[in-house]
Amino acid sequence: MKLNYYPETDSLYIDLSEKDSADSIEISEGVVVDYDSSGNIVGIDIDNASTKLDLKELVLSKLPVETQKLSA
Image: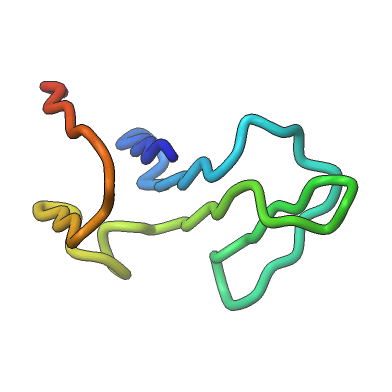
């Protein structure tokens, strides 16, 4: 899973899979869910992310992953 923030458009894309998107549905204003050809969610796009989310903090709880801190 990857979180990609694009400050020039204030957009956050949550990449859940390496698979290509085959369909997209806007589930609420400015929130689009991308699906692969089998109907599985592959990503979530959030427009105007800074007004909808607290982008200053990311908390991972009990996930079995290694974390990497990358500077912007």
